[in-house]
Image 1 (cartoon, rainbow, N blue to C red):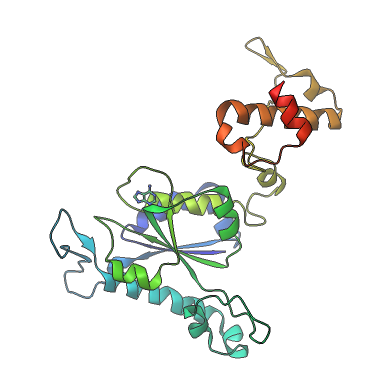
Image 2: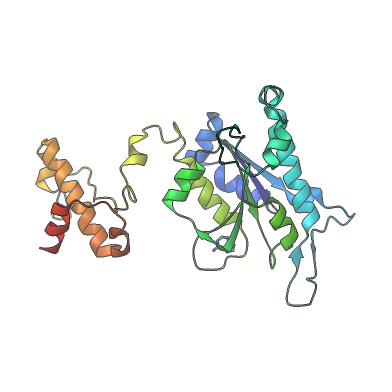
Length: 272
Ligand code: ADE
C-alpha cells in the first residue's frame, strides 16, 4: 500500500513513521510512505504557501495552488507507476482517476476506483477501526495535512474525497492525525504485523474491547494468572476470553456494546 502525505512538515512524517513496525514494513516493501512538501510547489520566489483570508479574520490560510500542484504531482506519479494498466483500459488512467466512482448499471462496466484523498480536519467524520479497514483496501491513499487556519476551500472541493477527524479536539496541524491514520491502516495490510491473527482478535473486533492478557511469571506482586489460562483447555479459554471482553466493554465502553453482536444468551448473562 502506498501513502502519499501532502504536508508542510515532511520531516515530522519521516521521523515518525520510518521506525518500528511501519519502518520495518517500508524496508520489506509492503508499504511506501512518501511525504510531499507542499512548499516545493509554491509559485513565488519566497516559497510562501499562505495568505490572508478574504473577509478578514485571524491567521493565515494555505493557498489553493501549491496544494493542487502537489496533489497533481502525486496523481501523475501514480499514473506513471501503472503504465501497463493505463494502456489496456479506456479511458486513460489519468482520466479514470478524475471520474467519480460509478455504481455500474447493466450496460456500463464499473470504472477504476477514484483516488481517495483524505483531508485531516476536526470537521471530518471521526476516524474508526471500520474506516481503517475500508481504507486498507486502497492501493494508494493521499492524506492532506492542513496548517494555520486551514486551506482555501476551492482546492478542497476539487480534490478531497473524505474529511476525517481523529477526535473532538483541535491540533496545530494534520500531521499527527495523518500519522495516526497511517499507523492504524498499515497494521491491517497483510504481512505488516507478521501474525495477522493479532490484528483480528483485538480491541474493536466485533465492537468489543480486548480481554486481559498475562505472561510469565505465573505470580507477580502476589497476583496469580487466572487458572483457566494455565489449564490448556482451549474451549474454556475461548469462553473465558469472550466473557472478559464483554465485561470489559460493559464497564469501560458501554456505548460500544450496543453495536456488538452479542448472542441472546450473552445478553442475558450480562443482565444477571
Ligand atoms: N487537524 C487539527 N485537529 C485535527 C483533528 N482533531 N483531527 C484531524 N485533523 C485535525
